[in-house]
Length: 151
Image (cartoon, rainbow, N blue to C red; front, side, top):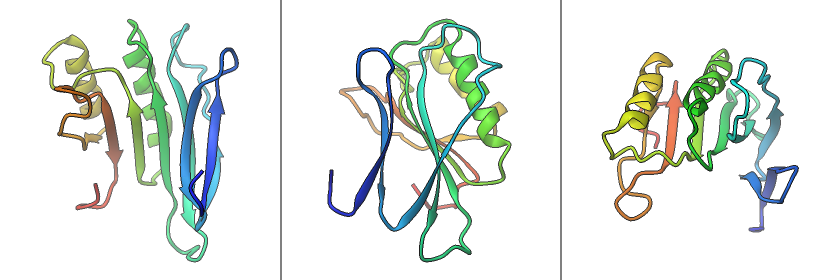
């Protein structure tokens, strides 16, 4: 753990691993619990969502950061990802959803097209344009209400 940081994590119940977010100690962190009642069954999406606000400036609006790991893309995972976006977008806060989606945004295929459609419906944009692994863009950052120029 780097000095001056805290770890917020959500471990898998079965065999270790999971998702985590490192946050500098100058931020107040609250874990956001999402209802997954609307999700299509057998979801493999792992996620951890937090609200982050500077400790020294409580007048600054908090932002939402959600870390995603999608080990595989099954038939319903993009719909479940959209359900997650809908839940987070109910807030008027700036939202960042980031992680390993295992969907190559450089490939023009059905999965990529579905993600692009979801982003449009949820008024979100994808910030990563350079390859993240070999010739693929798999590690993505989606945002809504982000300040211009912040990447």
